[in-house]
Image (cartoon, rainbow, N blue to C red; front, side):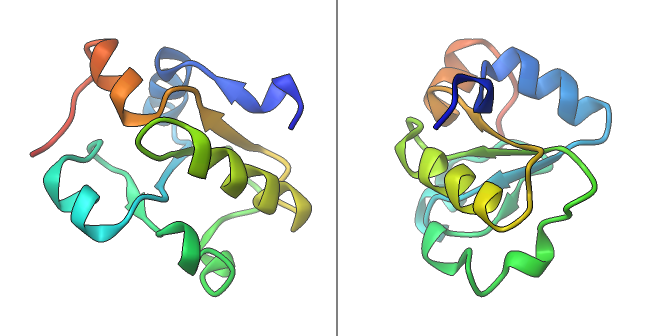
Length: 104
């Protein structure tokens, strides 16, 4: 994955505030425990079947717990025409460490 596909939680937060989509590729149990407000849950295993839910004409930020699953998701999305897909480095753990809002 190219470096340009990695963004900090702060950069992602600003983009989302300006209309970008945030996709959470964790499992439902993880999402139910803690989630980023406004995120759309599409577990990594469901991504191929739900690709149509990811817009090709808008920036998409993807996160998981620490960044590994979301990195795979971004590779997949970019392969299938979602070139404006970015991995939130460090996932929801880094998001919370940055003091950004979460829902429980």
